Image (cartoon, rainbow, N blue to C red; front, side):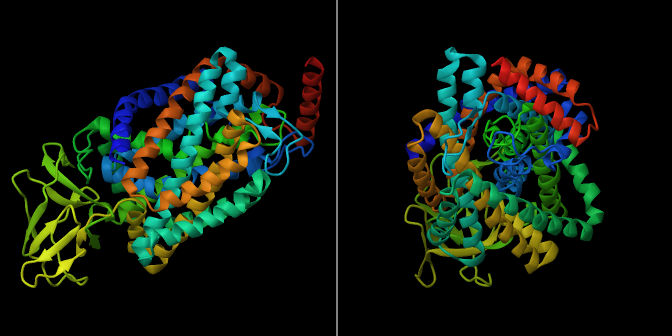
Length: 570
């Protein structure tokens, strides 16, 4: 595993800045070329999504609304709960501003990729329930839009998307669910992972129609539960909303408050954490959502693109902002909480203090001395940390009344008390939370036990629904690479990776997931730039035909006539 993480770290350092430049640069370019379409056609996207122009005779597997909810089930998920907390923890409150910027530009990016996916999708009516009748996504618009000379790039993107589906869309979801359940109920990740893997298997083996039916119910329900709870907390803490928003804006350009240290005084790190967590949350430019939207029943590529631009707004501008404001207004983002510190596992790390804050130690001593609860830094200055923040005091009892004096043995993961000689595997102390437990802490501060329950239910539903939707993304890529027979094998591997993700350490699974995102996003946004001319022509043609406020009957008449003309031409 160490070798894997070293390779992941090397690749990540190599790709993180190209990802930043290409993602933001492509969003700006497309926004300008398409005339700020994410703002001008926002209302049309709502009308199409609500079924105003649905035609049940159109080719496809699901309605516009089901395609939207399937994609939202993949995007509105762990990134909205754990990802926002991670961004604040590492990059400070200013990272939220860059999440917003990623979303506003990402609305246009997602419009473009979904429009192109619809334009170059493949419809095969012979597919069954598991296979579906439609296949689309970045691999198809790269190969069919750019030509066969780009097929190696299409193959690479499809393979990378399968990798992403295993980690980002699956293992991270299982990990976050298991992490929160373990923190709240002390239930083994093996038990939680086994249960959620079974639920995912029961749904995804039914194919896209079952997935669309389940997500069409789950996505709205979980969104209402989570958003309602967050808004109630903000109503209670209304006096802290404006100061928190002010903190987000000031810290965006002059970061000083990254609690884990990485974002302190380093603008580029705050920017990077905001962009990466924004990308993880809304998936704009990643090439994943176009796969779900390709299954929509429509003859007009642009109509589904207009639906897709709603996603980053709902996901990041609305839901992520609610999470961020709950975490900031309740003050939990930099408030230690009484925590069981499992010495051989969990979220521990060993850090040293530098001028930039705390960073992971390159080498860890065999022993750490604790005197009356306080750490005594050795010659290398290495400190025991929880979520990369040093623990100030250690106790032997959960009530934290008995300070610990003795030695922590880092390799064996035990502590030996100087006074009693007892060997302990767990100590207790005030520690900074991160990820989903941090958000749960914020909801608990606002609504007590009910708030905590809301986050637990939301994490469970978000994690399950995201994994369900991502299984479809991966199976379309598997079908593209290996044919229909590979789909069942892919789904079985997907379920296995879900369980593995649940029992793997949090930082490991998130790090691998971030690298996977970079691998698939960079070639995808390059393709969007090269195909932007086609997206522009499709956009001008569509909105030149369907004027603002057009009636359903007139829309359908024109749509059927255009479809008949295209069929004659082909």
